[in-house]
Length: 395
Image 1 (cartoon, helix red, strand yellow):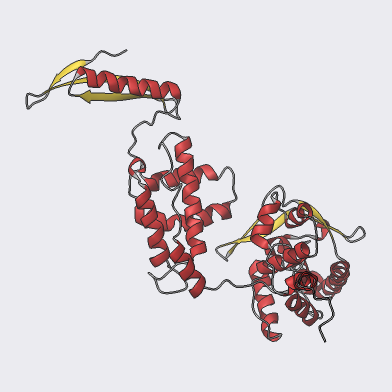
Image 2 (cartoon, one colour):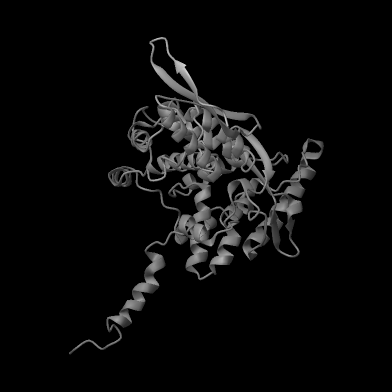
């Protein structure tokens, strides 16, 4: 144990100082803390506190690292667990935090600062697709807060901070109400709209790929599908490959999003028939193009065999929606329509989650199942009996 030394400052004031061992950092380097106090008793008390907390595993070593610097480290750490596209999404979300409070030392960050940051993001955070400094969607702000909470929770695990100052931060109720009033949520297609779209595109060249979107596959899964992933005899589809977009420009090919995303699905009859016809069409196109045809092995290709991406598929679908004078929805929202239909039709939760490629059935139902008024007609009929609807009206 280091001795406590008497130190005389230039002003003549006497203080007492010692050095205490605080363990080692993540690189194995020894950490030593210098304690300087007015009395020996104060130095001993502080030394005992540090040694006790170190023994208990609760010691927080003083650090000058800023929130922005920690977020950089956290994003680097997350590369072990998530895809490159996801890291890009995280960084884009956290740019609001970097701008507002990234300069604040991590150990000095307060709950009030985090709450003020989130409130300001909602009020003035919009950067693209509108006037800078206007309101940001609450859902976007909540995504920012989710990432920030995760990063700060990790900082607490690493003993950089005692606890996360974002733990109890929330988007205000007033902001939620304003957002709901000014930015009504776009609804996925109802069953009747899905059926109208299917009937209207039956002669379209990409009828089969669009049917895959309407059976719950993600757009990146549809364009990543290869003919080798299909067994048209057994009527099954194996989902093992995706082709996603980075910044709507660069294509990134990779395996399924999660382990649960790697799944085998049975093909509905109409989808199986459409795929067989599409394969026969591609065989004729290959013959007509001769050497000009690119045999990529993918399902979603153009007339010369060149593989298409999610942007191509999305724009093609939007054009068809315009031609059919239908309400425009994202292809990804077709996934919501599909899963909602399966849920309302009584498909068990475990099957619903497996079909979606999720590990958690409650997440599937919370995020993807939307019940509209037509889905509740059966409930209204049930009320007839409760209210005595089967009784004869009085004369």
